[in-house]
Length: 263
Image (tube, rainbow, N blue to C red; front, side, top):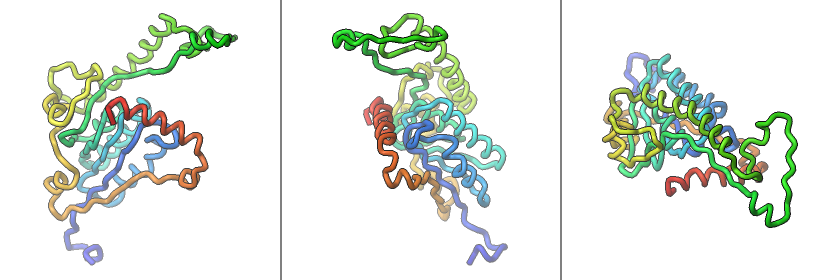
């Protein structure tokens, strides 16, 4: 009824965007393309008192992290809407990149935060292949086409090249954190991929304090504040299990990311 009477004040509402899982362009990952419509609606429908991000992510793609965070900031600045991030189990690596898109970051006492670094991981099988009498035959046009081949012995020059590739990504991550957190950051070395838990993350300025979604937003926006949840929808093909093989590989990769933080 209040909606139909323009001079009656309406209770504040806060769209809640859930960012759950690893970050990447795969069928199960968080990606800018998949999240764009959802984020756009959250900022554009009505006049929200704030937008809340509920984050539970061990990281993933640096590019997708950057694109999603940039979209959130662009809309927040355009609509002049404050953004609050609430970390559940973990906001590490790309997950923390997303959290830094918020104006304030709140965590549980046991939340894992940080891991501001870049990783490349793979396997090598040259000795196993040799024992089995398997010969690797590679013909390339361009010396870099067999770069970091898991079936060939690791080369020092490959390690140097990987580190050269990782450095600008790491620098972009650091620049994003410094730009968003500013003077709140402690003087400690925060950018060597260490992780912090709960209050420890607040002590070094990576987050703003301990706080849970509902009580914190009621404190900030009033007791009558209304939450409006926004979440990704699975496609019909995913719901029917039509991408079983692809989903299985995605689950394996996802579990590998989570296991780095004991989850």
